[in-house]
Image 1 (tube, helix red, strand yellow):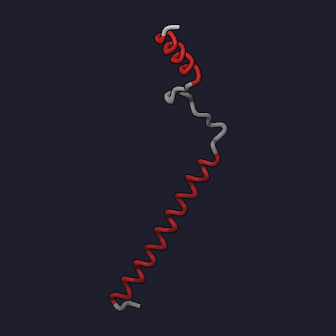
Image 2 (tube, helix red, strand yellow; image 1 turned 90 degrees about the vertical axis):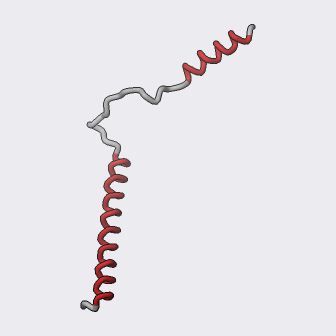
Image 3 (cartoon, helix red, strand yellow; image 1 turned 180 degrees about the vertical axis):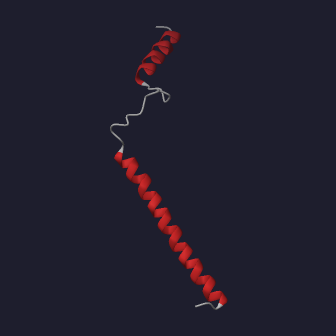
Length: 69
């Protein structure tokens, strides 16, 4: 079997087993991905908590630096 036929055959086999990353599919809104939803809301809450804690720390430092009660 010539080398060109072997390469052509392997290319056909590879094409069968690979999947395109650009396959267009409509999202299924009836069945949301709850893991992603939970991670999105959880990370948002964590960031807001960190923001408020940092703000409280900054306010305390400001008051201490300026001698305010």
